[in-house]
Figure (tube, rainbow, N blue to C red):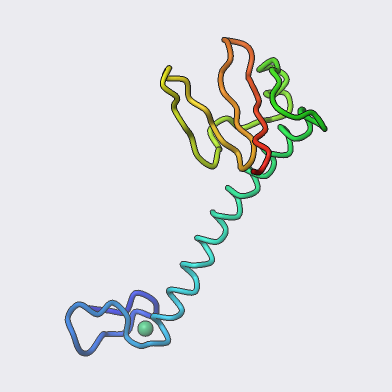
Amino acid sequence: MTCKICSKKIIGRRDKIFCSVKCKNYYHVNLRKVTDRVVQEVDTILHRNRSILLEIMGKRKGQCTIDRIVLEKMKFRYKYHTHQYKNSKGKVYYYLYDFAWMEFSNDSILIIRNSPS
Ligand SMILES: [Zn+2]
């Protein structure tokens, strides 16, 4: 077996994948960098999505409907949400932090703002 990082021959236990603590740490630090970047990208999309909903809702409380095309023009990314909930009628609510949205009709979206309680 050779080290995953420096390719040196590994001495010792057969299941070892690094030759030293140094190489092991190097691997984990760099792996974390990749993970952080992915997390950051998703965070950015989620925050942008929330900003779009916030902009549409403005100072209004409660809920409003909007044409899907408007959201699309604002580059809203439907796939990204923080969690989802299906009600007893089978309607799915997609949450974005303190906001939620659902498909109101084929071409309109209902946006709901959940004021913190
Ligand atoms: Zn090594």
